[in-house]
Image (spheres, rainbow, N blue to C red):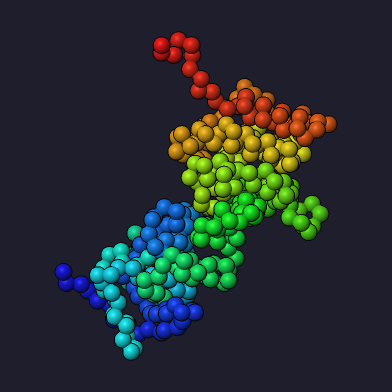
Length: 349
């Protein structure tokens, strides 16, 4: 098979013992040669990428369609042994073959470019910078990924656990992962708790749910023997999004009664309400979602019906101890959760 070749000048640098070759490449050529190997899903060396965030892709697509392009490089790991780049004194020759290089960094940017190309094909001819390494194993690929995502810009601390798979050896994993999910709850603009997590040192009045409350209730569920891992849900992005979707479903029903935004009466803005809601999620809602294989917001919304149920308020739990308040809130959520118990005459015997 005759293969088209790309020949470009390159710049070489070393990170430790790893050689990196940087050169320009058209968007369409990068799309052709690259693919994504997701950690925990793809059983191959070099798999370090995370599950995609659709909102981020949409934002990048719009950014590109407005005439923008990226200055930072896309990092690829060439893994194909049948077609190998030729490194000359000044030029690099790249075989333009489908799916021969893992994308180590730039997954969301490239997906955003792909979506933009569907709208404007001329974008496929635009140039981007590519930094190529050749034949890296997972651990070395992870080092580069972490260098990009932790040394150069903030990234969740527990990402390192996902990449290296060392959770079993780290007693702080559950606390670290819980803290990262709390951060996503606080910083994701789609989260019902956006800007509502109270961090140590926050100015008075800023935030409603203490970080320690979130970590305290979450850690047993996100630990290596917790509900998430038990059902093979290990990725930080997925865990965070499922919890955000769940609270968004509650917010949907509370908004119907103009209750979510009522800070003086919203029980979920108090520690007892937040804890009760999460305990209820993992005990009653989580199994339904696993069985359905769906944590989509519309499915979570469909699980509840509060038309004939009075929503619990802070007035209802006022004066109650924490345990009693949590039980009242859980009982209220139970009343709204649609039952799927068959009628007596539906049982077969």
